[in-house]
Amino acid sequence: MTDDRDELRILEDGIDELAKLNLEFFREIAKGKHPDGVAPVLWVHVIHGTWANPEESKVRPTWSEPGGSLELALRKCGDAALWQKVRFARTPNWSGTNSFAARATATAQLRDYFKGVLLDKQTTFDRHVVIAHSHGGNVAADALRSLGPLAENFSGLLTLGTPFVQRVRKWEEQGEVSFDSITGIHAHAFALFFALTLAFCWLADGRYWLSAATTVVGAMPWILARFQRFLALAGGLSAAIPLTVVPVYWWVRPVSLGGLMSCAVGAFVVALFLASRMAIMHSVRFLGFNDGAAEDDLPPPLKTPLLAIRAPADEASLAISAASGAVFLSESLGAVGIKALRSVPGWIYAVLGAAMVISTWCALVWPGNGFWKTAVALSWSVPVVVPMVGLIVSLILKFGATLLIALACGPEALEAPGIVRVFAEPLPRSEDALGAPSTLRMVFPSSGDLAALRKGGTLRHSIYEYPSVQAYMADWILRHVVPPHEVAGG
Image (tube, rainbow, N blue to C red; front, top):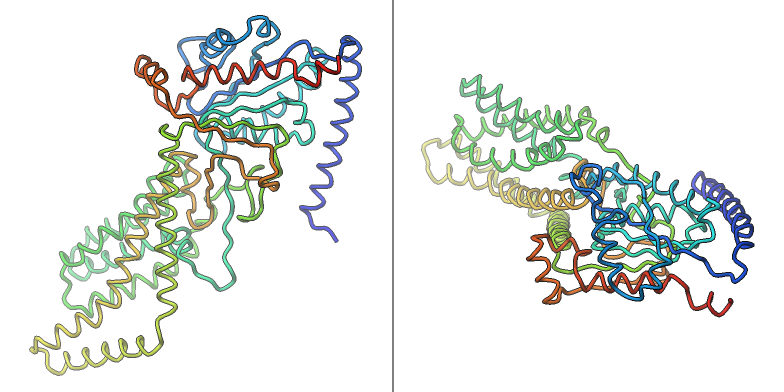
């Protein structure tokens, strides 16, 4: 018995097989013009990265275009006779916007371009390699992966400083309330609860304008989360409101602790009622071709041999490393906190409850006794304040980690941190794991590289401007001009 995903996979396999047979037919026709069996031309397809759309540049050609600085630098390296057989293709430009949606659109366009190159009778028998920088590597890898078996006709993919990203949807077990769900899906409701508590305190104190303003501020994250461009602001407010409201409680100084607790209970009821109607899930837009429905739902393998070159000290790598560390820290704290609460023996909760009841009763009987006033404050505040402070700290860490991921990979990471998890890794995730034809080469800038970077005033992420990387790229390209097996076959 097959489900919808299996049926879709069977249909895709049939389409891929038909496309492969179609390509073999075209190549056999073209092969008649080359009796020695050697491809006459190697085409180099260069894909630019984020914020590098040539159409937005005042100077043309840009580094990624034919005749640009990259091609000129590469042609100065290696055998000039071999370079006569190399052509730099004019690949379609993509927007360069740092978002999953923009890269998904670019992937579809590039896939159609690659298919056209393979099936064009003028280029079908030629050889092809792809060079991509930054998030252009994600676009190129996903486009090649979506080609299925046709991708095997590309001799190689070389990426420069690419953080291979993938989104997955995180599912929770039935009945489970995890830290991610509290600080992710319900983050806006959590912020609204704090804001409403403060608003009710203002209202009880007769400060009506402050109460109304606080209510509006508490509702702002929910409203802003519905607009793509304001997701970062919505997430920031959700993290900042609880942190701001806690010290303001002491400034408001309600009539009594009982009054504060009454306000909190009222705010909780209202926030709980509104939370189910906030439709936070409605703002989440997922998933794309390279995204998974779960963490173990890995994408199909990349059929094209991959060589990934990265500089460990470049800005993108540092941002992703910091984001990964922050994510690990926030998730670890959340997991420890939830586990600790679940492991607390029941008798401790019973003792705390008894202390609350006894201290409150004694404070009502002896209202002027300072000891019972202190006992009430401690018995009611410690069990609430300590976990709340830990939750707020974890929430801030969670937002900081998500913000770093959003800066590196796209604002969609801010849509629902408890639902969507983003992976950013040196090599693409794949079903084949270690069997995938991928190689990672880390480049530490030489003195010549650093001198060139200082002279040009560029970032280390512009790894294509390293002289040592350019020499290595040139050698990699020329090795694909006439592969050894074609020379032997001729």
